Image 1 (cartoon, rainbow, N blue to C red):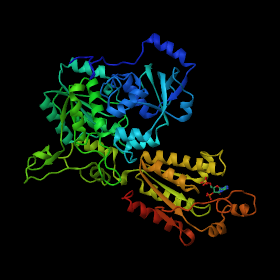
Image 2 (cartoon, rainbow, N blue to C red; image 1 turned 90 degrees about the horizontal axis):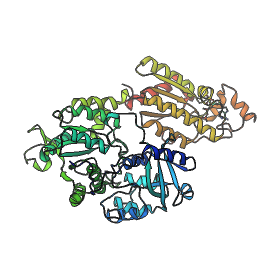
Image 3 (cartoon, protein in one colour; image 1 turned 90 degrees about the vertical axis):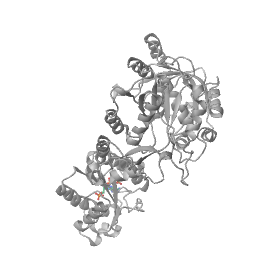
Image 4 (tube, rainbow, N blue to C red; image 1 turned 60 degrees about the vertical axis):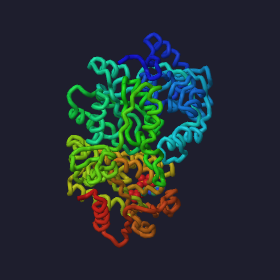
Length: 570
Ligand code: PPS
């Protein structure tokens, strides 16, 4: 295997400068503008700097970008299907011009590289979406990213790298293209087949890799993506533990596990071609392209964005030019009669087939049901169960909202006692008054301050929920949008049960346990919720309780029953 030759015949790019130049750039940076990179931009920069994106030497300038859009080639003719561009806001773009240099920094402020700006231009997003992804439908994750999370302008120019983005996890598994090539050479591997994945390796994918190794008489580079993948994917910490476990099922010294900090676009055929070029840069001689490679799923009408074998067709078309053998694979299915996975087209008419989709797998995990051993390895099941406990083991937040005096705090205290009696999770009560004493003592009751207060509660509750505890929150939380934001913060980690304590204002005012309504009516307190400040009634709470005719215990029971219905209590 040649150690320096890239798909395009040139040498592997390395944008990291030597120490002397680094010092010059550090001194220069005192006078430079800075751009703080997003997660995706950091991934792109890392792969530019370490040569995985060879022959690119920086973020694309407009002629390369236009050429990639129009013909999947750089201006000089080299095959390259994906725009690698640095986007900035209109304001930032206004401060940049050709000839200037800018410091590229990570979110903590570390300077990773300097870019020498050659061009700044306004993005025609519709044109880019149509050219690269074949659609302007925002259900496609890359189109959504382009339309909603990408600045208005691109900045192109050569990059000089000072320092690789920092990673503190799985360091031994983060190999650069040069390190992968050197390891393969040391192991005496001359033929290496690359496998790309963003999912745990189950038995069917394992079978694909083993068949590919046999077919190509090659060793395996298992290269899972640990940058940005498809929203909703299994987190990479869990996946990497799964890959490490499955690695032990290959014969000794036949495969290498190496993590790829790539920001995927889910761009189907163009993305598959891009993946093949990247793998060639890592030293692969062969690359596996599966069914629906890097597919973004279906659009709102349920139709796939790309045909299942479109990616294979495109990569095959360019394989000679990019100098890598493609190993195409169709869908693998399990045939119980044979007790093995085989390609769907090889199944006989009288044989049964079994498959489990990602959606079904998630359902099985959520409900704690058995995952059949034919589907995956016991170690993988154990890891997935740790990451996706059934609901009765997940954390959750009970979020009360309602007028002052509606009974929120009292019901919250009853619930606190009930959860402590059950005793299976740690419980924290974040009552309005407690929070205003310990977390938000500097805040008043303007809309802005109430929103800050409620979002702080949401943040603390989301941390508790993430760590599988129970958070009980009881602020007034008068605004729908803020409540919705809190729900979003929490639901990514566990349950969110919104309880509207809908006791009418007259009853709350009559109760007036703190004498605070009397003060508000007398004009001694301004902007009091329900008196001279708004309360937006929740439209679809999980529970709505009017405590006028209920004891606190009866009200708490309604919440407990809802928690049980949703599966959070056994
Ligand atoms: S919010 O809107 O969610 O931030 O309010 P919260 O943190 O729950 O605080 C509500 C308690 O503060 C007392 N209080 C007021 N409430 C509403 N409006 C105004 N202007 C106000 N000033 C003081 C009120 O007694 C609330 O107590 P609870 O526990 O809800 O009865």
